[in-house]
Image (cartoon, rainbow, N blue to C red; front, side, top):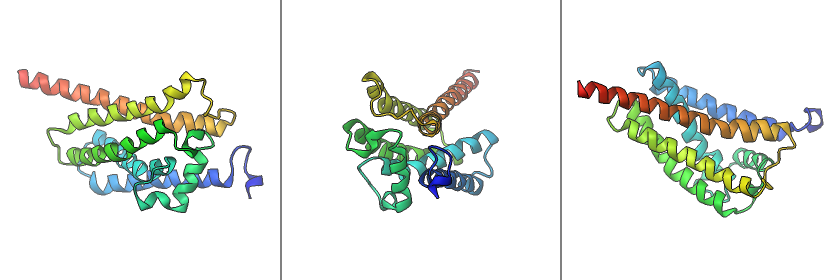
Length: 200
């Protein structure tokens, strides 16, 4: 069946992308279930947060040699992890930078994400503190994942395949740059408005 797929797109690639789509669907359903009374902006933020937590608790663990839950040992998650490692070979070995970042990501970012979901849903005063903290953690994780490899000429990144380069490396990692930046901007404006109101 792999021979029927376009070049670079195998059955495992298709199933991996399908698994990611299921994660998005789960995040949409959770947002619909819990975020119904939230503003449109907050529903988009909740969608991202649910997706972010789902990814960190499932796929991110499989991309690292350190697995912290039974979910990451499922055949689907392991296949997705092996598929991504075709784009970035450091995920196949115990690369100390990747393992360190992913332990921090899985533990800290997941906890911050869950707390931020609660803060958004309950309109808690500490919401933007958590939103800024999580966004900075996500941006730092992305930077520390790729910058060390860039500094040595990117020997672990396979950019010869359009799928690996544009979907796995640019799109999926780019989302974890774009969304945190947007969340930082949103927090900036909300905190600025709050300060302006409190000064008047």
